[in-house]
Length: 321
Image (cartoon, rainbow, N blue to C red; front, side, top):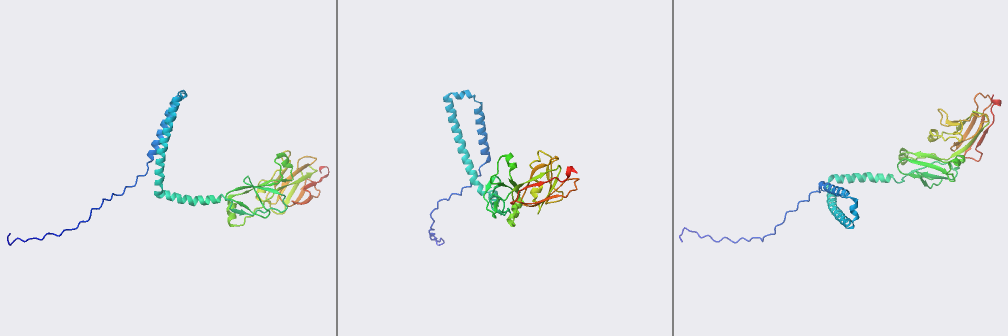
């Protein structure tokens, strides 16, 4: 070995870390289920159904063939159920991952909760019913309600039909016309119910009372004046008189007035015996006859009240003069 050669010391041993087991890469998320799978399942089911319908019905009389067909049907049905279950399971599990699905659920909840609350009887209204009103039944949208005098009626937020009926009212149409007290219907529209949420809504409700009008002359006119306005529903659709379908009698609101009606008697020399139907209140009845100079016949009446509700208007003109 020459002097020029330098002996290098051995390199120190380097400690090596023990080999770590390889970590497998994370699995990619499963792709969302394809709609094509469901479409092909439906098409297959349609083909099988159409094929079975082509088989003559007489073939199924054989018990063996019938058994085989039933077995195949059960297998096919089970297969479709299993395939459909898997598809729908994957489909619904993938839905919560979609932003649109979350938005639809939040919006739907915000809409459905108020909608269901609005279907409950949450709005109280305070009907004004005369204390002298006889016992009656209160029906709201065909459902009878209990009502205490001076109490309130709770409604849902929609339009309603209200009916007040005498407790012992007959169901026979003919006898119903002859009763001294008749039922009456009212409407509470959507706007009224909404206003009742923010204000004290007090509609006036009541029954209809029969008032007999007996005249001894033909073509007698009776002015029916109420102390206070008639309600809009009565003005819009007044009840017919008892004889309106059998004679020329009529009962109509006076033009331009909200508290006066005019009753026109029959064109009969012997007069007529008729009935009009009025809500509660105080009234003045004034009878007159065209071309008659005699003083008018006048009567007052409170409804409901203790006095008789039949008014007799005697002959106004002698011999029709």
